[in-house]
Image 1 (cartoon, helix red, strand yellow):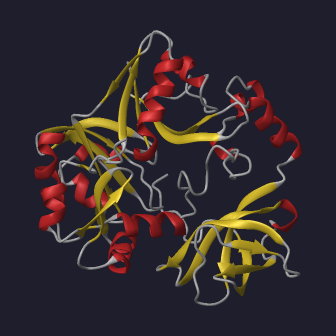
Image 2 (cartoon, rainbow, N blue to C red):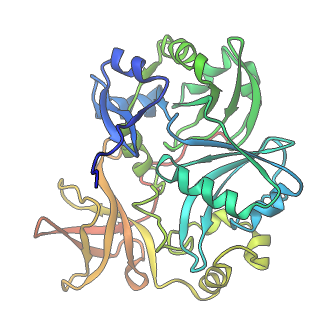
Amino acid sequence: MSTETSPPKRTVLYELHVELGGKMVDFAGWEMPVQYAAGIMAEHQQCREQAALFDVSHMGQLTLQGDDVARKLEALVPADIVNLPVGKSRYTFFTNAQGGILDDLIVTNAGDYLYVVVNASMREQDVAHLRANLDGIELVEQSEQALIALQGPKAIDIVAAICPAVEKLTFMESVESEIAGVAARVSRLGYTGEDGFEISIPADQADAVARLLLAHEHCQPAGLGARDSLRLEAGLCLYGNDIDTQTTPIEASLLWAIQKRRREEGGFPGADVVQRQIAEGATRKLVGIRPSGRVPARHGAPVCDEHGAVIGEVTSGGFGPTFGSPVAMGYVDIAHAQKDTPVVLSIRNKQYPAQICALPFVAHSYKR
């Protein structure tokens, strides 16, 4: 039996990444830049202070169209899609019968269809899940579209100069417009905690638009390394680390993403489990964890109480360049989830003091 694996796929911006000195790695089956010559720390600070451009074309872009499409999608997610206004986007997740999270996604009401963005690592499974459950709905994978994200406080100045329509957008709003004559869907959202935009454009125009944005004095490219440290400081979940099929939205502190009507009515997979946890509380919770020293805790590190008993596990961890020290997220027993609770991290068989803290580590800067 052959053990050969397929080589990673490349986005349409691959040649640009190489030209810019990107260090390419295999991520979710895609050859992506983990960093450029400036390094992760510099790219992180570039995003916090000015603007950074990320290639996110590996993400799955889908359109769903057909009769009663919003209500049919609601049968798979706990968000209120039926009442989502045109031009608005909403964060949600597919759930299973146990209330676990199959994947998280962004849904936008585009008027006569829904525009959906799913994670690269779960793209095939999500498409299969939708096709199997959305009877009478036309699902189209937008493989001819690239997706780039411009994030940071200067992003609005850079994008508005070539796409004035974005000036009226607030966080989680989306518009179809043009950038330098190129048809684009521009959404004011992102995965860094900063103000910014995700821009869907025809793949054959992506290189030109990316170069146009990078030509601005306040814009530099950034890779997956900075994207991860930025989202960690912002307390944003990474699928496969902080949320998965064994974690519920309530355990993951994502109750805010389930609107009141859906909390009350249910009607999505695992609703009985989620509603019970809303009413009675979960037995564990995703929390922020601040190590006291300079040693970062990584995914899988046990979290213990002061007596050495294991009470949880780190799901994401590293150094927070803006925060100025190591930061982590993880699940702990609910009895130890209170802010300021002292805990001990077991890192490479050594014990390090830490403290439960509120998320995010760095305040969000979204345009409300």
